[in-house]
Length: 377
Image (tube, rainbow, N blue to C red; front, side, top):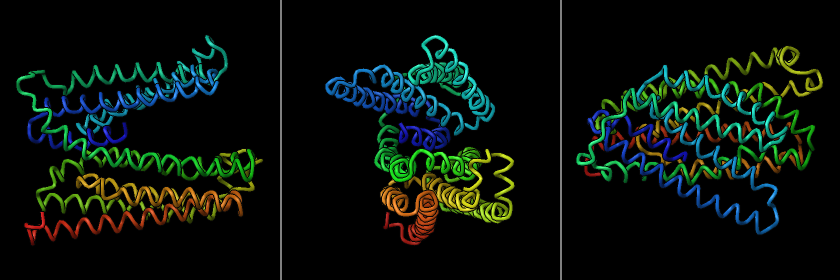
């Protein structure tokens, strides 16, 4: 679903500019149907495998998790379209409603089915379905065009949206593996205490920066897409370049400031926010913040490349850094424990940021060359 979500968010502004939203929505629905069928096919294979190998006690949980995956993917898609349409109030209200719905239904299902993981995920699935229904309703009232099948040209949008979406599906598996491998490696080489210690540092240092970056991308993404449009206008492209680099510079400056503040105040911050048992890991906080800031800067540059309709250019970077990150996490965890995994996170984030910066700079040079030599297209 990740590629469809990104594609829907990127192509909305182009379709709106061309006054062809009906065909755009028809193409989006077609791509969502394809992704849902693919998910259903994988789900059936997974459940058959679990049944074959005698893991039937996991089937109920798996079904609930797959329903949650499909419904939350649909919710993220609608959120992406609403954000692209700059319906800030709708995006904000549903984003605030989401965690409360999850909490209420998770508790309700636990009271009904008992304190099990299946009950929690079932509650999440129901909350996500309700959230998607609300998003569909308000999207229809706000921007969904009237249907006129005779005027729909689904293929005009379907093929370019599909081409834009496929790189996300390619690198998604690798980036997921990299993001999970740090805890798996610590569990294997250090134990649960190491996982807990690392998670506390990660939650206090990396996650807040990630949330701020997500908010920034949610804000500037539609603006950047609208400025660049269909990427044929050099003036509009240059405007997008400048905005992306300014945001990247601000991100790096904020990261540097946060890093030095954490160097001075990490012990006090842990006393304020974290139980005393975890205080021995406070010295790692500045480095996790540095890693989070570098990765966030790379994500902003990735947004620039997405606005230029070049997601395929990021495939090598995403896959290579993810595989390298997995290997580095395992090696560092085996020899240096928690500190090693934090060092691995910093190295991964630094390489990712630098490589993305090179790609973003390279894309700007390509734009100049295309203007000077149109035959390069």
